[in-house]
Image (tube, rainbow over all chains, first blue to last red; front, side, top):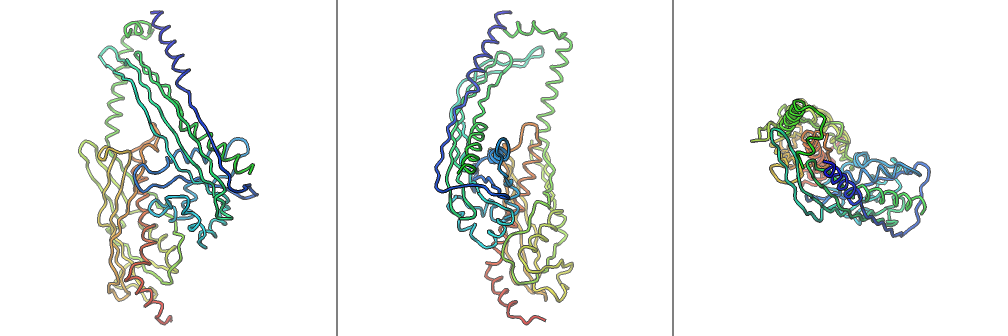
Length: 221
Length: 225
C-alpha cells in the first residue's frame, strides 16, 4: 500500500514538473513612433473569418484586452463589443475587413473617423492567429462497476499558439508595427484510478506575453 | 492497485456506495440536461443604430403580426426541444435600422393608409428560420439562418421592390466555460448575430437595389410641401 502511495506521489511530482512547461517567444517590429495621451484608448480586435474556424478565438482577444488594461502601466482599452457597437455595422462578420491592409480605407471614411474621435480611439490592434492541437499520444481506459470506478493509462497532447498583432495609429491611419507571440507546450494526463490532468496553459501564456509586449510597444515607443 | 487505494479510504462502504450512486445520477442528469434543447430570445438592446449615410426619405415601417410575434420551435431527435423567439426584438431592430438609414421614419399600422408624410413603406417579414447545433454538423458552432422577405411600397400601396435577405449568425461553443449554459448561451449569441447580420446587410444592400435607386431619384424630384 505504501509503495502504491509512493508511486502515485512520484507520478504527480513528475507530471507537475513536466506538465506546466510552456515555451513562449515574443518579437516586435516597429515602423513608427508610438505613445499615449490623456483620453486615448486602444481596442483589440480579432480576425473575423467568414469561414468556420478562420477567426481568432474570442477569449484570446478578450484576454489580451483585459491584460493590457490591467497590471502595471494599464492602458485604457475599449472592449471589442463596445467598439463593434459604436461602429456598427462595419465590423460585423460579413462586412468586417478580413486583412489589416483593408483598414486604412475603411477608417478614412468621414463617418468612421468622426465616430473614432468621439470614442477617443488612438490605436487599433488587429490580432490574427490561433492555437492548434498539434500532437496527441497515449491511451486511457476507464471502468465503472457497482463497487468502484477508475481509469488507467497515460495521455499527452501538445498545443501550439501563434499570434500576430498589427498596431494601427488611428490619427495617421498607418501601421506603427507588429508584435508576434508564439508558445508551445505539452499537457499530460496520467491515470492510476483517478485521472490527473496537468494542462500546459499555452494560450494563456501566449496572451500574457503578447499583452505585456503590446503595452511596452505602445507606451515606450 | 485499485483495491489497494480503496482500502486506504476512511469512508464507510455504505457512504461510498451512496456517493457513487449520487455521482452516477449526477452524470446521467447532466447528460440528459445537455440534450434538453434551449429556449432563447435575442436581446434587442444589442442591435445598434447603423453608422451609414442617411437616405433623404421619410420611411414608414409596418411590422406584420407574423414578424412581431415570430417564434421558431423545433424538436430535434435525441437533442430535445429548441425554441428561438425573434418577435420581441423586431420592433427595436427596425426602429434602430430606420434611425440609422433614413432621415426620418414613422411606424405605420396599416400600409393601406400610411398617412401623407411618408415617402414609402417598408414591410419586412421572416419567411424561414433554420438552425444547426454542433452534434448535427460535427463542428463547434451553433448556427442560425434567417430568411427575411422585404417589400417596399409607395404610399398608394403599389409595389416598388421586393427582395429576400439571408442573414446568418454563428457562435462557437468553445467560447463558453464548463460551468456556463453553452446551449442557451451559444444559440442566443448565434441568433443575435444573425439579426445584426440582417441589419448590416440591409444597410448596404437597400440603397444599391436598382428599383430603390430609381425610387430615391423619384422622391428627390418630388416637390416637398
